[in-house]
Picture 1: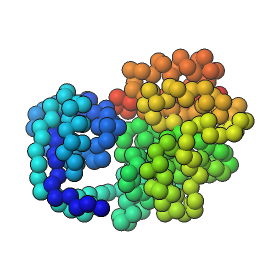
Picture 2: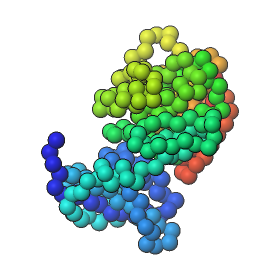
Picture 3: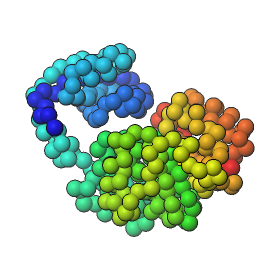
Picture 4: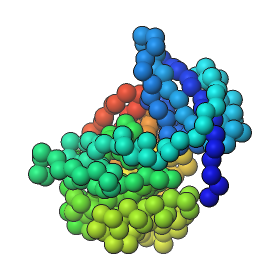
Length: 280
């Protein structure tokens, strides 16, 4: 691996109420780590990111002029050590914690699930509101003996949570081959052996395949083309959790549910994001 001598920094800002969606969009655009900075102006969140590639930084900055990015350069430092020194356990939901492999942690709640997770190249260590909302809705589901499909599984966090809650099978799907080694390592690290992750789209499943529970944490533009496949894959009487939706767009999902005959059980709003648990 080529040694990086210079880090290319971009420092920007946005209104406090827009930070969650800004962070999500920047991660989607390729930002690996977003650092929230000390506030300078009331009502405004300051943040920055670094890359080892100037062209990559400049591409992202050009894509988001609304965040008023200022660009600088600084000598490289050991970011891996810096990040490890600051990493702490994350309370994803009431009964789910995620800890880095190098941090020892025992929750006060003896019934809480603790997953040992290192994200690496995959998005989703539980810190984002869409992931935590999905996990919170999962606590309304009885997973014992059920089969689960986690669409766009990322690090595998939600699939592993389902397994810990008693699911007999939790299959994750991914279309990014770079995530597969990370998922496999996470499943092995948490005592599940080999992961049941599938590289490919939903049409990879044989006709007639059904799942008792389907999880889908992705933005609407990615979710929307999958509606027919989700309907085909969800067992009769099954449960569907959708997360990653902007609250202002929830009517699209509710209209789809009405047409598909899904009944809404629980809705959850956190920040700009809306999530829902429905039953077929």
